[in-house]
Image 1 (tube, rainbow, N blue to C red):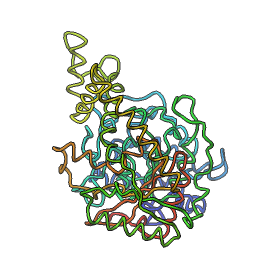
Image 2: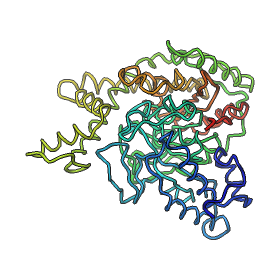
Image 3: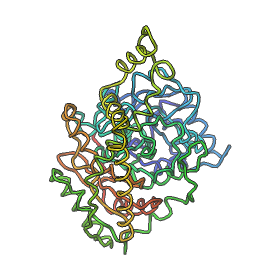
Image 4: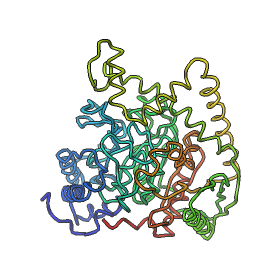
Length: 494
């Protein structure tokens, strides 16, 4: 039964809610579906490298349990029951290796699930395996994985974006219906844009970070990558909850995030910050973005230009705060207390130095060095403290903008996916790939990327930014735009 061919040839590019309709109508079983997607992974992932590992035995067992629920045995099925899901490999999965794409965690098998994984399992989702990423989520191209770069399904000579490149590429390539990624400075939205799928960073604190391997704790947020906005809302309904195990988890009301999807944008005021149309933005990206703005206006929204002057400072603020927090979080990986040991030295210090030197990648080392310097005596006030002060001003600037606008709209990335290796020798150019997404993390706001066009044969993303806890509004605007176009229905010809 596992190897049975699905009755619908397009099953690998269906949305999760379309899959649920097939499961409800008995056109396919969850076990059949899971077997088909696992076969799809075997057929195409050798070219994409989106998965670090699959867990087929556990996935088929979960699918069998989902079928029982769908037949009326056990808890009532939900929107994700029987739906195949990938988990980015910086989220703990009990009994399944979790490495954060780093050699230093090779062989680590967590004894517990991340809270989001627990919630997905309770909802009946079928977890297929773990997604490739930039090591410890540090990167914008998914070329910094210790286990090989991920390729963009639209053109395997180009990057998928990062750090959740494996998650975005897998959704685009039909290797799962939904993936969970993490977003510290754009790591969900930027790869979603570059791979032509939907990716959302929720309000900071809305989704538990318990079980997420920390990069920068005040910036990290888990969120969904999906094929359309409705799936994004349905997934957020499952994973958003207050978690006492996470001290940053909020007790905000968790409404139905999809409740406003059909409301449209008639009468809404949308702002376009001029600073996001940065110098060097590719002409094709600008053209697609301007067409998206015209489309939103045709749907009844009022779109006005505005200014967020501190946007230009956001990149500098981020690359002080994020490396500083990374330096503190990664200090535990010394081969003695945590992490694999590379070799035994004559002293604990020598063992630790060898381990970190041999098992951390270049980008991780670079950020640890920057962060350690920024936190060191004599430099803390000049760098880290100053960055936090500017962060407060950036938050205030966004708050003032949202007193006038319901949401802000920008390009997600200043460029489409670039060629593999093109920016590996120029870290600054690589960092600039996140210039449109980083301010959102600094302010802790919700934002989503939806497909809005093609340029040079590659997808372009439209970013919608909302006020704190304005996740419903972000989804509402994104859905209205998405449903008025067909960009989200396109997929790479694998």
